[in-house]
Image (cartoon, rainbow, N blue to C red; front, side):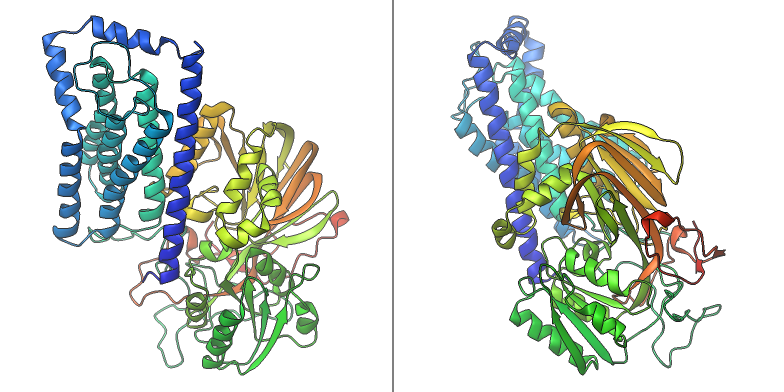
Length: 635
């Protein structure tokens, strides 16, 4: 079920992404018109159109006219309405997300086109035109943008929402329509080549924006699942994951069901993996709960609802702790050392969660996440609902799972636990320079605004060592080591990072020039629309991104760089090393649906895994790696 807060967050994300798209298109149009006006690089635009006009013929005139009709306003509106009605009315099920994606893409593209066209005001080519000139300017091509939003949107739905080989043929034919329309518009004297390219870009950005809002992480409700089909652990909706939960008292375990392992001393309990391994708990039977509250992220009204929810679940003994800038989890460490609570509840963002996890990791004490910060990336990657109160209720009704953490260290950085990501370079600068006032008012889009200040940040030489192997030399603007991989808006920066994989994933971000930035953005933004993650390490998006996987990752920069850990800035440094700590943190996650498909192969429990397999910090780094019992996994 979609909560009101989830819908509001989706609307806010849509508005901000569309605003960014409009600014990008308008800036590009003004740049092009200035270049053309001064006789710069795009001066051959008119020359190309004049060549086409000089070679016109009756057959080409008729064909170009037919193609233009395909992208005329009446045709686009009519086909869009027909497809939307079909998605909503035809069996077997109403496809609301797909209908909103297609209709929204056409509508948003048109709105952006009209606004940018008014701002840029570029005249049409100075050649005889075969069509009457509409009141809009030449930049960008509205016909091309509309055709890509409509026919490209249908191609996306064909590829992601249907099965069978025919879908590739259908998608290929649909994707040929926009460039054919663009050629016809230039032939008929209506647009410059740069206008057509801008129309293609506007349509592409629209599909990425609307797709990330309405399609990302949503399963196809149409054909019945085939044997062995399972939801993607990263993009699944809350409750879709076949998560591990021990039966309620009185439930009869199935054949071969193993009794969950229990924590011994300070060792982390074994098993319990999100989406697959052993787990336990069922409903927590009450007891003593320590609630760590970020006073700004968790206002009094939310705190009262959290208190009431805990009382309903039997936690009558509650100790509330407020965070402070110099004590990000308050005095939780003292409370934990004095006897240990039965449950720790973190009410805040990823920084608060990280600080609480630092204390309870390896102890077997469950951690509950109440996501009310700016990013809430760990909660998002674990499939918790975005609404804080709903996330708490779902977790208390669910069971526990043991997830991996990472530990990072380097020059000027003592070994520190992280649950989400550790990074250096562009991302750390973006986090460091984000306005606190804008973060409080806008949420995560404040980071995007801060990022624009560092788009020209220079590349830096660096070396990488994976699991103590040979040095790998590269240049990059950013290095990010992740325990999980999905960002806000469903963007999958690290497509293979899982909180139960026993590995960390590294991405080097090194776009070069506008084309490199566009390639990187298209690759990351397009991942939610693709069903399978990348299969191997290596470069993608023309080398703008490069991926590596290891249990220990050592990155050394030629000069000190800004660094961050779970969204918190760190002192600048020239070294960032991270090692995975498998199954170190016990968390409570929502109970899966009653009818659960079999878990993916990489989440199934098979042979025991050697207890000492993880690679931790060296002895001279004094990294406090928690003890843990043997863990089972199928790597």
